[in-house]
Image (cartoon, rainbow, N blue to C red):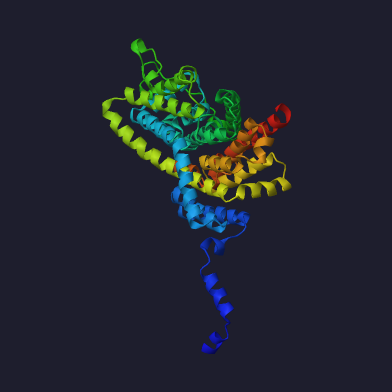
Length: 456
């Protein structure tokens, strides 16, 4: 052994020592595309196997990708910190206000009152379920929270388990549709900020709201075809009934529950105030209207529930915002590594440009399951690329929203929540949840495709 060691020349010894003390980023460095594939694969495996908080899988993915792509440990950690801070500043106030609104409505049983008001004008249970999920997801800023709030209400509306489960699926899908399309939700905000180019959000919503309602109508038709026995008109409650959140006024005349709708009304009223009188920028505007909505809800809440609602809302918001911040960290590191331009250059050689944002969003959604995370990362990757200058902002935002709906499967936390609350087998959840959401994504993609080539 000693003889073998003596065979080494001084230059060989120096080479071995140099390799031993190479920086970690030089030892691990691989092609960024390979690094991205490894990172996405491991995030998927860890998400499915351990089902831990997405924050930790995304931060771990950011560390892994940074080192594999040739960034130094310090550069990687600095990128993670910068990404966390950027996303928190964009979403912190919005999500906290939405969570507080949700918890205070829930504590006062005002969600039931909102559903009761919808029942007065809509006499079809599936439409009520889909529309309730659609409406609540926007001001609450979380489709999962809206679904949790609606779950006990829909359980009380339909006692037959099979029919009740259809209502739950529709509430989930309806919430996702508005969440992925309507400004200002945490899915649309990062896309709008990255690609709007100064376009008014009112112009965007003038397109996205009718489109989202059209897509919701398509989903309702799908369920009507698959479950024709569930499309039963709702019997109008008697004037003196107080069941299921129906509150009657004097002389047996039902009244609108204005306190339940107050945060929604306050948000709408504050929009022209912010635009015309305060002359707020779009970034300031979204924070302003959400603060007005939350402030209205807090002011009208009884003191007995105010403190509890604020406390629970803050806890729930913390869980949501940290997951989104993890996405911001991964997205920022991916962009900082130079992967974005390299990947886009190679993708555009293989497929038409219009498919690039759609497929990229679908891939990221498949890997980690969150539509907000998908929007944040995709926006960061595509910002400043040739895609932005080639595709009109509105179709571009719609393409990414469509991609975020394509594969809502085992990495999607909403998938498992729906499975637990319905008690259905996984294959049933795929048919009743994953497939309708994917069909919604296909519909959005087709509209974006037509808009890009025929309108813009």
